[in-house]
Length: 183
Image (cartoon, rainbow, N blue to C red; front, side, top):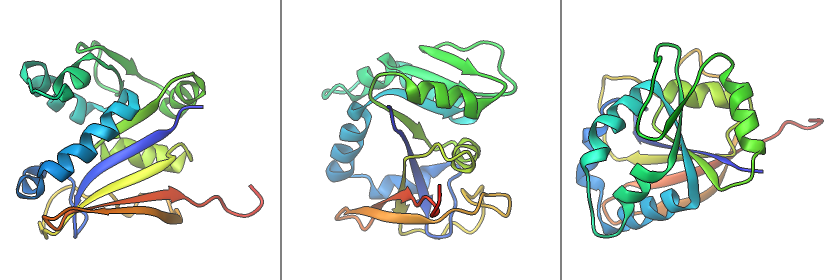
């Protein structure tokens, strides 16, 4: 069974919107972690906003270590209620997104990697479909902007399963959902 890995850049005050604030904290260590994460996956699972931003930027990117080729070449699944068509190796998931993701998880293959996509992450958490939540925590207080968790976010208990600290002060805090007793 495939795993859903949600990887989200976040500030100390929970902001995920427009992560330009993350740039000063991205170095070779973070690049190696990001590469390993991407290459462990065989498909991306994205919300519409993240998909549209990525699809506008990534097709023209190149690099020497194959990250851009991997990003551009892999299958993408886009959760949306507004798009009618998609390009960039993408398939639209409309209607019952949790049911569609449940089917994807049951297929053979590598991880399904979610980048950003706060609304989608919350939907998947509520449906108990996230196997690992990786918060790329940046030592920044943004003050305003879209936050990952809101009053509408599902209540969940998570267990810290790993911590990766970069020399810049950013950390990847990886959590796994705790299944309540009796389930």
